[in-house]
Length: 159
Image 1 (cartoon, helix red, strand yellow):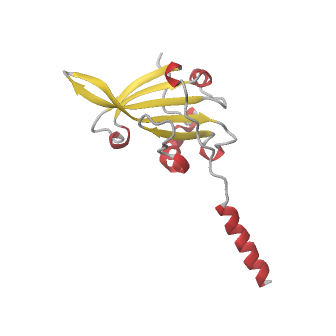
Image 2 (cartoon, rainbow, N blue to C red):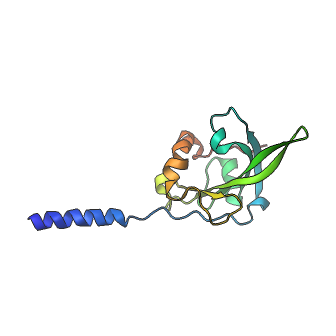
Image 3 (cartoon, rainbow, N blue to C red):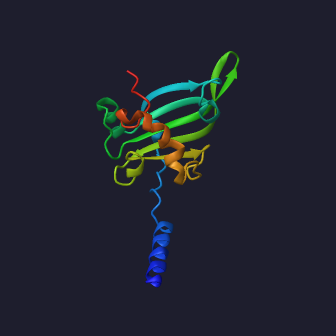
């Protein structure tokens, strides 16, 4: 009996060690040719400034564009936001270096634990260096749960 308990405990521990991580979110090639959803700036003084301060440009893949219009995003929808430094130059605000390229990729099967969305942030101009990885649930989805009634999406399509 004792051997069976030890074996069951070992199997349980092994299965948790080999539990599948969420599928990696792919880099959204060509996203700047997608539909421009909107732009915004998060300035100093905003609660999210330390993490997301700067100029945001949001883009929607064709499927995501339909999701913005209908309120329901189909699998395969991709939303990308370019987060750029905001630089003050001669009484203007201009784009600086890219801080991160944030991506939401809809796949209800792959990302069932995060509302059907995969989340990632690609650092700077890199297509491979990931900022979120396995931490999507706490780094992204935790905030997006407030938008459950909008399919976990904060932005709206600019008319």
